[in-house]
Length: 247
Picture (cartoon, rainbow, N blue to C red):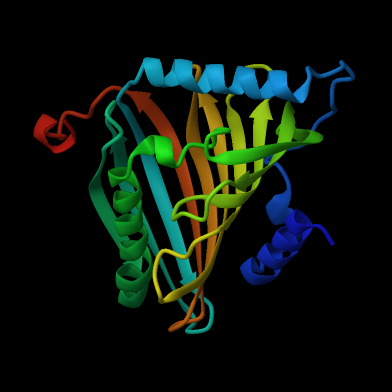
């Protein structure tokens, strides 16, 4: 069994979501046109991502974080407004939690802290680019009616925030549609394995997060599962966000 098939099989067993986890958010027919060479696809992807970075914009969205600890039979949900500034800094507003406080403290709070830590790192060190990853072309897949070029990506170094898995690239815009895999370095001693699927939505010519599914195999409370949905996207800064918080 190849490395990526092993990672996918192991991720599906630990996540417990079944084969549907790895399926796109829809179905459709694949075009029959001949795709560009893999090197050209990667070059166009890098151009599209760089063009997006050259025109940063403030972005607001609703977020719904559903978390579970199956072993403890505990569950909780956080609803909030999430604002990401053009500088890449994140602020949450109108937080409303429902469920067990253990979920709030041990799962959702830790996720938000990890998000802040990743934000504090230099973005270039985590970007899915040839500087950080080896790219291997796998073929074409359907993604919600869109044609996606699929690449296996393997990190060149074992660093926190990098993953072994796949990158799906939209054949029209060359922006990312999906990333999934296993983080190659655990963020703490209390975590054994972290698997994720990150889906994107193309909004106003930008790739914005649509859904994140994550399974964390911990040493203390067993498996923790998170499903995060993003919706109601809007460009610009909400009135209740102070500029000093995000500049």
